[in-house]
Image 1 (cartoon, helix red, strand yellow):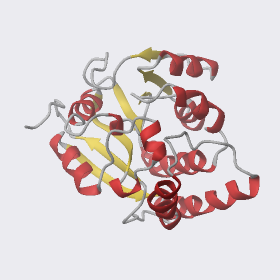
Image 2 (spheres, rainbow, N blue to C red):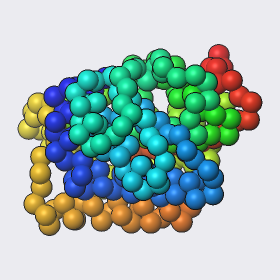
Image 3 (tube, rainbow, N blue to C red):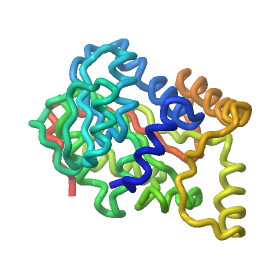
Image 4 (cartoon, one colour):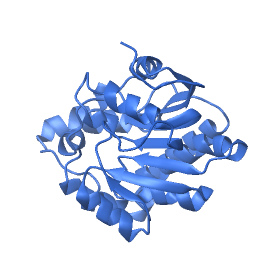
Length: 258
């Protein structure tokens, strides 16, 4: 569960702030080949927050998206965006039958589960996929990038590539893409998170304040370059976020492997 105080900040920033724009475009770069080559009619955005990404999926691809979140405030924002199907539920116990969706997406949700409890929500995301359906997950990556913002949003853990790979294998998912993102800005992030914040004793805070246009554009361009590389099939070996694109095996029952 995310800090409810952050929901309004996300709603104000999600359309235009450099980080959200860049992450959306990377997500679409991973999904575009899947959607163009396959028939997808039913999609789930699990842990949808304000619903902006779910609305983006509908607008870009034209299929139905069910937006699901545990926070009632989040669903209010979803309805304001015109999302017709909004449900309140935990990602760890989804109210859908097996195989209900062709595509499931979940952005920065697993990070809010304590270490050791992330397997259940991933198993649920897999369970509600049809056989050979697709799953796109994004998580915050690498503990060295934990920040005051991480504390503010109640982030419980960050993931490494081997950790997420093992987690996907435990749910018997076939990994199609597994890549870090937001790599080029890591020197700036390390300076801010590991030097500036401890030195100044800054308290946990949102970090989603509006930026001057020139600075927003300057921060966006490294993500745009990474998106271009990812769209050409490239992978990134290090970064502050981690994407998993996987496919459910035919006939898989989506139960966790001990």
